[in-house]
Amino acid sequence: MTQDVFAGTFDCIIVGAGHGGSQTAVALRQSGFEGSIALLGAEPEVPYDRPSLSKEYLAGKKTFERMHLRPQDFWSSRNVELVLGTRVVAVDPVAKTVTLENGACYSYRSLVWAAGGEPRKLSCPGSELSGIFYIRSKADCDALLAVLPDASKVAIIGGGYVGLEAAAVFRELGKHVVLVEALNRVLARVAGEPISRFYEREHRDHGVDIRLNSDVKVISGRDGRASGVLLESRESLQADIVVVGIGIVPSAAPLLAAGAQGSNGVNVDAYCRTSLPDIYCVGDCAILTNGPGIRVESVQNATDQATTAAKAICGNFKAYDALPWFWSNQYDLKLQTIGLNCGYDAVVVRGEPASRSFSLVYLKNEAVIALDCVNAPRDYVQGRKLVETAAKLGSVQLADTSKQLKELTLETN
Amino acid sequence: MATISLRTRDGELHQFDGRNGMSIMENIRNAGFDELLAMCGGCLSCATCHIYFESVPPGADLPTPSVDERELLEGSDYRQDNSRLSCQIPFEQSLDGIVVAIAPED
Image (cartoon, rainbow over all chains, first blue to last red; front, side, top):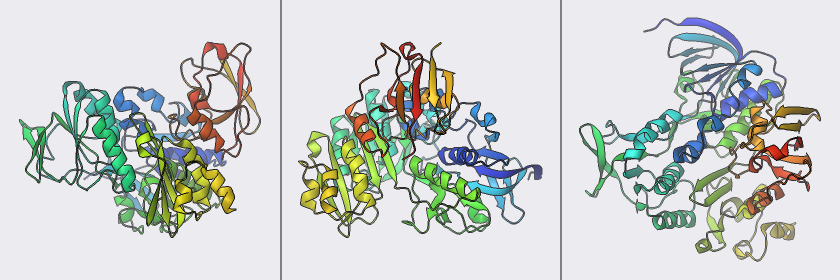
């Protein structure tokens, strides 16, 4: 047990140095915040662009330096103290302190929790073997990249965005790839079935062996190293390495232990305030209670919530009302999503998936709530208006590609 | 060394040395200006690195915008004829003296 050592006071302490944390610091300074700021990061790296990890960085197409969100000297130039390579393990909302794993204790006036999440770990037998990789941090990726040249067979567990993006990179590198998904389609939690089926077909056409409805029973091993995946069906898949992308677990435990309301995340109001005084939460951990009531894992969400929290700290209360958007790049396919599709009760396919340019429009109570646009930036851009206005359009109209979506908007006005 | 002149949203003009081979977005970011969000990191998935070209040196050619870039710019309330996404323009010697302005935030 280490003795807590008082290490200093900051007017604002930001826990987490990803997109949310770094944007909080930037937006505080842009808003004229003159107090001291500490940005605490679990990783040793200065803030960087995480989405590139499973895409260009894994593919060796982008150097890490180009992924820095800001240049190295930016943080000192803005008088932001970086405290990197350490985690916050405890928050005392009464004394207004945070304690790091090394026992250092800092006091704050305002605290912004932007700690993001950790990859959900496998729990089946064999999960402790070496040769099993996750893709969440630069360190995760570097460990994977170190062995990748010697691996010819890769088993990916999880058919979400990270797993599919990694599969695309591995195929482009010429690896044999088998992808195991527990549910009956890929992207099952985030997209409608036509999108899932389209991506399954694309990946299969690119040579990925996709196994749906497949639960992993054991990671088999040899000499302490993963050598394959044994499915519940008893089928055995050979692999030199196993890459796991089965979602994240929000890193919110210290804040919840301190009494913040929430579960599987931290509840926040429209200004990103938690139930604890002067403690805000933004990004992957935050659950907007006046919104859809779910955590949203995206750069846009983290960035815009960070701006909202920073403004609130400066006394400028502007409710968070940004429209969510997302992207995923696989092969030459650019998927762009606008809106959240939670609770959709109907979908309309706009365009022909076989043409590799189409959109899926999500409806709820006949109103447009979201679009997934594949190689269709025009629909993505014009669909925003439909989501913003919750446009009520018939499926025949929405599917009619002879008209642009903005023309439909005009008709409804 | 080639220079870039940048007008920030407060109207001030700043001059700095550009690094060839990096995009204009990366050059602006690396010079310490924080007004460009560039949220997608430069992969042409958003329009948060929107700039205006105020002046291009004689003889210099900007790459023609792709369909995707034009569509994304179309979605901005502040699009002008001289709008571009700065992540799509590699900086090079021939652009020495270029003047760009950061567009308002959508």
